[in-house]
Image (tube, rainbow, N blue to C red; front, side, top):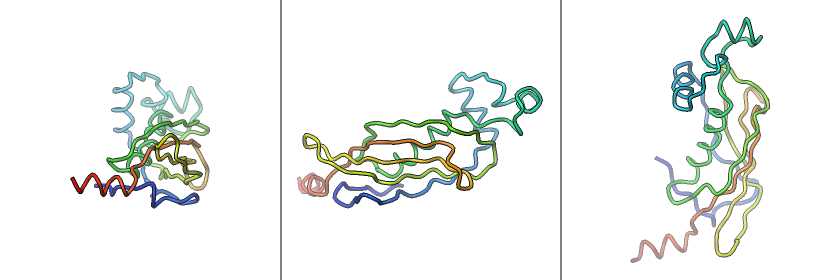
Length: 151
């Protein structure tokens, strides 16, 4: 269960909690099935190694992007909204590798009464950024939460 994050409590430079994941072959299979991704590098080890030249099957870029988005949505809590998200797959990951997904607040602003927070994101393996990204989230303000609870 996540705790609600409020716009008032966020500062530029804050980091969000890390999501540590080691993707399993089963997760990769289910993700490929759910997204209709039949590319053999994600499920056929001999194809991935012998034909494509990888060291193992490859974790899907969209799965890594989903984990990167998850670290944000886990952090913002149920009262927040993901407004904008982008990610760029820069390097491959393999099943069983320890991956970390995290972010840093780069700015906050009031835009037409909306409390927006900008983030730089990163999917990382052993210090190497595999997937940089950005996000903008809409967060509730403490005063609106207090007035909503007072009704």
